[in-house]
Image: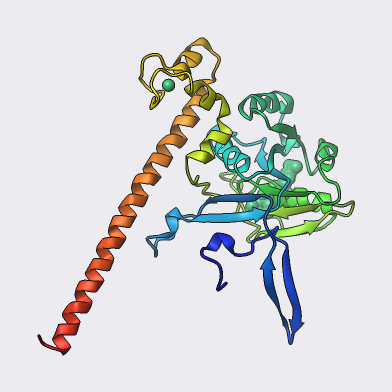
Length: 305
Ligand SMILES: Nc1nc2c(ncn2[C@@H]2O[C@H](COP(=O)(O)OP(=O)(O)OP(=O)(O)O)[C@@H](O)[C@H]2O)c(=O)[nH]1
Ligand SMILES: [Mg+2]
Ligand SMILES: [Zn+2]
């Protein structure tokens, strides 16, 4: 803790550490081993602090696969999926999209194909933890030494899947009847061992998936980045410019409208965050100047000039 410069260096689930055996109760972590992959997002904003919104939060480390779990009986939100794919591609792990509750969906194959076109480059599998369909495809990812992490909204069936894979009975919660939303059954991230080898990390449902910077985007939108290289203007925003390779691909059908819209949305968010963090810095400087001013004033109150 003394050597760490920021929170992202603190141990998280998935880390391997060197530890001194407990003396009188508590083991001491001596060193955290280098991470081979890091799943992170922008730390959700804490109202009490000005600074946290620009900080990186590492959710889990040393992952081979990240299973993005989405429920087949709900509207599949494509922009949410792209956002999750973006943080996973950027982590160094391989994303896999798992569409849960296939037993509740009359056209699993059609939906799976639809998602496959959006999730370019990632495998997509439909499955049902309750009826067992598609489970073998998921089991095939695991072998000794392999770590996977489950992420996704609350109530999509992450813990239920973990229970089937590990033969355990960790707490799950029935989703609310009225709005089909989960109720945050899982409240902490934790790692579990599969009986046949491999490890799996369960996480609580995520609401906010903030991106850190531009490099986050390029990994998930390689097609657009490639096209952008052919635009006439180097600083093309691909919105209104003439001779824009992205817009022409869009017009010719080489690029999907939805994928393009999501790209613009995430770009705008990053622009907003960049402007916000510069405002935050200004506010902090102002606050410090104010504190200093007060200190000087107080000083002269005690000790007149
Ligand atoms: N019909 C059906 N229901 C399922 C399936 N998998 C999970 N469920 C139900 O979905 C509800 C939510 O499951 P959980 O496993 O708690 O969901 P979770 O993703 O872990 O939710 P959080 O821990 O809140 O993030 C429970 O009532 C499960 O029984 C499935 O394959 N089919
Ligand atoms: Mg859970
Ligand atoms: Zn362009």
